[in-house]
Image (cartoon, rainbow, N blue to C red; front, side, top):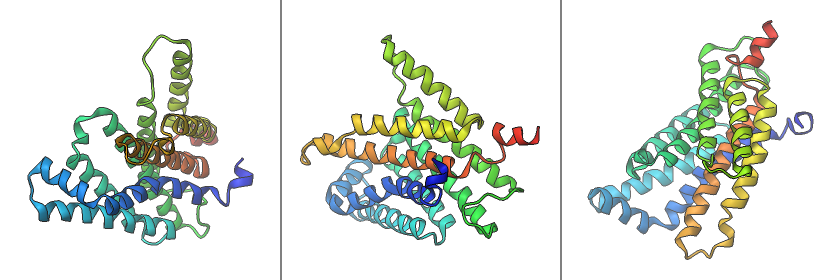
Length: 253
């Protein structure tokens, strides 16, 4: 799989990773008044501050996406998108919703992997090819990114007694642990990509719901957020787990 896709995989991973920011930035434009009124009503901050919040979201997300895709100032783009995640977590009260908080943290994990990739490209002549002696911060970024990505799958576990749910939970948990500790990482991450994509298309099929229904927007948001986590996992597949992993330690043994 890697031999066939190695030239395209990092680009596809980046596009998937920023897809939720792209969709949300475009949403801010088309739902400007609704978003502004929601922030104004929730925080009683006034028309001007609410409008500024929506504008900052729109500009920050779309600019970050353009920079990431064009591979210019990627580190600054990542820091900007981290800021947007933090801002939205507070503004939309995601902090008190465990499921959404874990998904936002998983999104942050994907950005952390993107940041690690951009650091390696800045130091290497060969873009996308990790060097043998990697800097310590980059290794720990990759570890943190992997661990945060795993949080996405914890929101998909179903705690009921049906046979299918039990099998899904066991297999999913095993794959999550493999990705987190960095053992057979690329294979485990690729398996999770396929599994998560199938679940995403089945459960978040927003295109089957009429546009005027609130569920359409909800599923659309969920769909693109999941695609971003898939992008993070594809970066793991493309670039490997990094220095702080069992796969890397095996080479030393």
